Length: 392
Image (cartoon, rainbow, N blue to C red; front, top):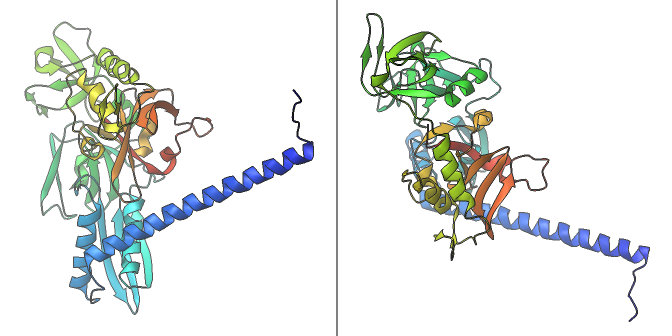
């Protein structure tokens, strides 16, 4: 049987045709997502209402409606934007933790009929800032508030020695996110700024949790505080490290300490058992399929940790590793990703060595967080919003 052979010129022609078709599909896909984005912005604008009269109360109401429609959780993400009219131009100012929220706000105002919109919204924190945006609570109880003058709604407490993210520094206060992910304003004197290296060392250290209040003549550490263990060789005491680096003895019977490496190994073994299982939205079994949050939920159920069902619900649990501290990631951390509509819509388990395991079409697979890898998970570049550690 004669073989059909292509000439070199025909091979080049076919290659060029394939490249053109590929570029055409890429352009059509981009156009599709842009149209989807436009439709989403129009829908939010429709729900907000027709173009409002541009006076302060109306603009404030407009922003409140936008905020309520796009934020899946008001305490999980910081979003503080104001709008003012200068001539025919809307000026947006304030701070947003995520660029998605600021983009949506800008586009919704355009769809409301404000053709001139100036965006001066600041993204916080600034990971390039000096000092870097990391800190630690140095008082037994650091209360955070909804307003910069430390009034309004009490948000949450950071306990003694707890690592925090400093979103913004003001005259007498700092806007922080504590390690559980709640934002709020705290007194500046109650937070010590630390380096990124110190922060990573702190969140990855072996810790002991105090089960009762501990008092000495010059020190008070509240129950629930988790402090790094410097030495545990004594039969009767742990040597713990305070938030300023000072060591102090605490009786072991007041502390709860776990070696969690074996538990995390079980979590990852369970997750790996779903490898190549079909992706099935809403599913969580290896026969008919599983989705991303179902995979994380089932993996952690192995060690008795009961997580919520959906990715955006799981993101509200655990302890927070923000993108600017991604070097702190450890195997077993759950990574979360946000879509263009400002909703947490995907999760994955970190395996270590820049690899993740997740359920994404068409099946459960392992991908890389290294941009140089052929198996790179491209969403990591723009959509990664942070990881949650359910085992700290």
